[in-house]
Image (cartoon, rainbow, N blue to C red; front, side, top):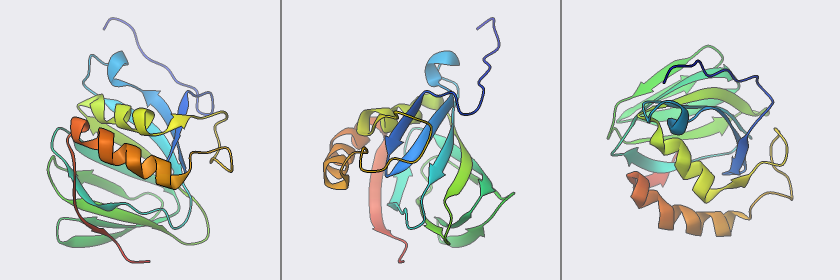
Length: 162
């Protein structure tokens, strides 16, 4: 790679998955696979099952909102300015809390994991949370179960309770 990658926030491209917006800042294809990074916006109540990634480490930096995050056996309350690093294979889960969406920078090393959201979700029509124009959750869960293992995603437990 001989050139810089520049992205202006709000210009896309993006993916709607998990009822959320993943705006792609840099992809594995732009970094020779080394890095993937998205600006993620998720509505209150969004939660993942306890899972791990066998191929990547992850990091996130919270820009706005409240997120309860389980990493291994520890539970962390993340708010604006919080940073979290998840080593490869560490089981983790989260739930967005409060009344407002959470917005955070999500980074994976190497960068291939961001492709999972593209395969499971649908292209975002605008850089906003999806509404009725998003993918139905039952259809999306079937896609997660089918596509996730190819990306090293292993579900190992239930979500954090509401």
